[in-house]
Length: 284
Image (spheres, rainbow, N blue to C red):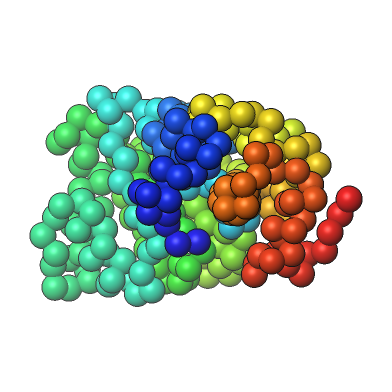
């Protein structure tokens, strides 16, 4: 969806009485909706930090993994932890290690072995040199090539595994699990101390999510009828990203057509003309 211009946002807010735009992904971590599944994941990650090892997070596309990790990272004490996030790792070992070194603010070496040594030394010596425990988050990791995935394991191997000098968290959609099942990655597979699959919202979380965004925008929490909410849940399969997409699209068309409420009949008409959903059928 093409971002709205400031003029379009003003018109939309005025039509529905919004003080701010609802269903935005650009929220402070403290302003995000908290589902039960997301709470469980964050609590598990907080306990994992005490255990050590490598954590694995999986879940369908658009279910809120990156958003939950942002909230987890944002809740940590900056005096104790330093978070380094690497999105969409590159395909080659050399490229990935260059990406790591740049993220760490290190000089980028010419040879792969020197890049590896620099990155590992930075992570291993972080606590002693900077006073904080480093957490390396590799997000959108479903594109990991096996040899790059094995580099992650080798980064954690030092001092005969006497202690965990840094924490590694790998997150991605289900394709990531297929990569990790490869036999040559058995050593990495054995190092995961915590794993969690983030599930899509159920109907009640979908309803609460929509009302949460309407409430924080200053709008009417009942703008979407219950029939519409159920339809959104069905079409989105409980994925927050898709819920946002459907809700924003519906209120835009509603404002264009002068609708004060997004009822079932109007929403079905909206879906019938939506290029991504028009073949999904109509439920009463």
